[in-house]
Amino acid sequence: MTLMFLRIGLTLGILLTSCVPVSPEAVTEIVQQSATDTPTSRQNLATYTPPPTYDPVVTMNTKAVAVTASPTGTDLPKEVISTKVTVSSTVTTPVSTKDNKASIGGKDRIFGRYPCVEDPKMRFASAFFPPELITAIMPMGKVAPDSGHVTPTDHLYIHRDPPKGEDTDYVLAPADGAIVGIQRFPEDQHLISGDWSSPKVPDYRVVIMHSCSLFTIFIHLGEFAADIAVQTGEIPLNGQWSAGQSPPIEIKAGQPIAKFGGDSNDWSVHDADTILPGFVVPEHYEMEEWKIHTIDPFTLYDDPVKSALIAKVIREIEPIAGKIDYDVEGTIAGNWFLDGTVDYRGNVPVGTPRYWDGHLYIGYGYIDPTQIRISIGFLTDISRDMCNICRGAYGVRGNDPYPDTVTSASGIIKYELMSRNEQSKWIREQVGDVSLGTLLVEHLGDRTIRIEMVVGMAPQDVSGFSDNARLYRR
Image (cartoon, helix red, strand yellow):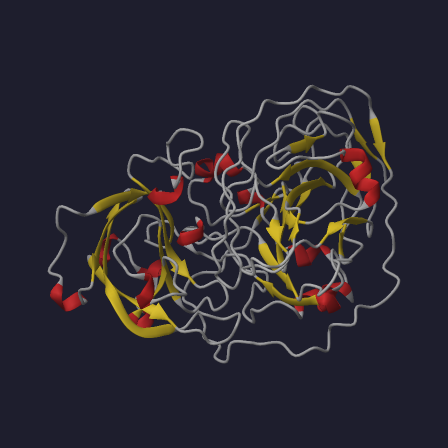
């Protein structure tokens, strides 16, 4: 099947704090979130001017490279959560729009800026990294406000044991396509996160278009493979390469793209033929237009690769790849935005630090979705010493009531925020023993809630809202 790329004149989105691209006008802070909850020093990308357009037609070779050997990592033991409980929240199914196959003005159907002709029904033909080298895959949906991730992340985290010497492990193209965008972080990354004595390696974000509807995004990749590097040339710190400067870089399934990078990187897949139903107001995510099209990437694989990758995921409850859309109409469940901030972007000038201060998430854990999770964007007076692993996302004493059961008829809810326990290197989901304060929540109807955080006081000592209460809207 042949896929043609026509004239490409585009502005590439730059990586957000959530490690994903933003609209051409919005350029904001980059922060890596590792599953070990180690803060990073990655900072802001500068605003840049769109590159000149490139006119020639480029034809992609889309002949897939077959997987010739079975992965060897399927028999490795995996940590799991010991207790399985049915969550009361309704599991929503992504809405398929596969009957709408036409591109938008000849361009892709997610970003609307990458010209294309065909929109094949694409499958992944290669593991993106040898499964036997993966130590853990953390699912989508993690929250860590200290890193800017107040709402659930739309990418998975891939972990490995970094090599003691030179890095020779490459991330591979999962399917045929073309690299259409690359950004380099303002600072290179250490080979071992948190070990400042370890060597530094490049830190890239790479966007791959497989068809008019399907994209793969890798973040925090290392040095490019030679045949890729020769086409991009040197990309300086805080710089970018785009298909507007030169032809798209054709790639085939199984082809090395770049070295793995550090000890973890991010992976996400987005399909215009899927719209997540758990975002009550999808327009509020136009800054991240791919977010509502995020899919479970394992569904594009066949066995044995599919089983080998799933075996590495540190989650036992479906959906195994995680979940990011928790909004339930008429309840307090899901994402909220401070009154006046309007939407995900925060209604602030481009480049404003902590644009996520107005974000709030009332939902569930990303590994154990039976656990209520409260993730607060604004700075509270909760000391990190009281819960070093919380990083702005807390448990609830008694784990009740479930957010998707709280409506305008429920009155004022008093959640006693609690620390979280570290069950293992990867799992930090269960409620801890340290009381941190009380979060008052009241659903007011009309997609509006009122909240107030009272640090250091138990629910029985908080009579009701004060002048410090805040309004949040969908």
